[in-house]
Length: 124
Image 1 (cartoon, rainbow, N blue to C red):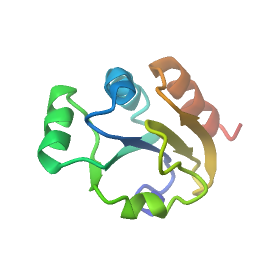
Image 2: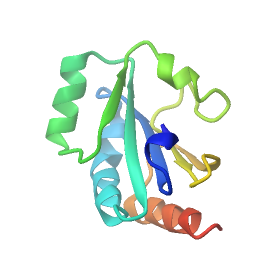
Image 3: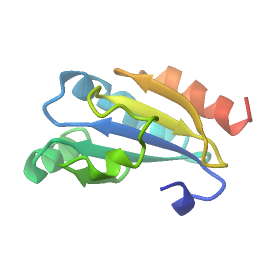
């Protein structure tokens, strides 16, 4: 996932359409992705969902970044030790070298996420 975005901070957000906290943070994630577009790339990881519900969620919240549809959690397993398979939402900030820089379990707000991205981009 990070090799698709060389030189950029990558933000991976694990979500599901039925998850109340995911719905709460969706507008902040969309705003943060627009605010940090020069330094970061966002990717959603939709788990334990059906395709129609996932697509309706991204339309409703006007999600400006792609999401990987992963109903069985096969992509999630690739992040073993970095992302919880049970706690959603979870957001992972990955530095330019592909290392985990920050993990937020639970909803994240726009300002906190933007600050984490800026710090990560600046090597902090």
